[in-house]
Length: 203
Image 1 (cartoon, one colour):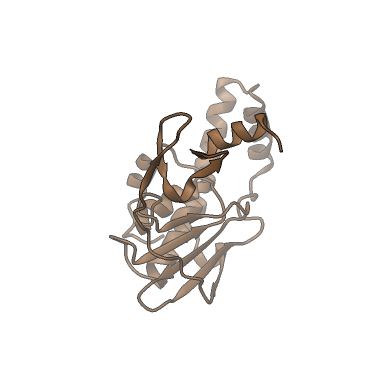
Image 2 (cartoon, rainbow, N blue to C red; image 1 turned 120 degrees about the vertical axis):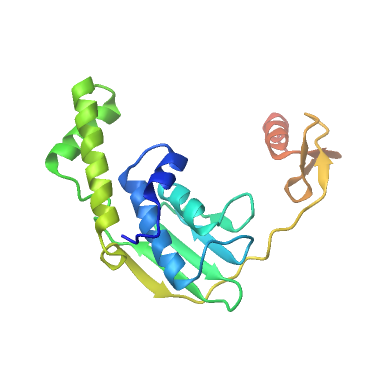
């Protein structure tokens, strides 16, 4: 693992250490090496196809965040990340190899099932957490190339984030971005109010 990455700080940011977070650290390590340093503004874009713990490590290390508009989520259920450098359009797709997150010992798998079912004893929970952290540490110690397939891709570079006008929903009175407004029978509505009205008044 790169000695320049402070894993303890990332763990504090996320709340705990786990294999998913470790995967994010290693993906970010590739991005920092191939695309560039921590993004102060929007000079680097990350597109994530998963919402697992890994995304917190990517936000922390690469500077790509939802708030800045340079972290984009696509709900594909795949542990795949695309990193784009706006300056020259260089982009890499970082795809987790099959089996990396599933390479648990039989004991780890058994305890995982018990913990998820809510039937684990305190001792079993402690042992599971120990195994979970051990697996995370093994991922952190692995070479990134042993975990991911990395390919250079032609990017569809997202437009920089824009500040849009706010409109007020005529149903709930809350403000919303103008690009998310919906219109229903002469009213300007937010998405939740539009969906409620649309269900109540079918065509």
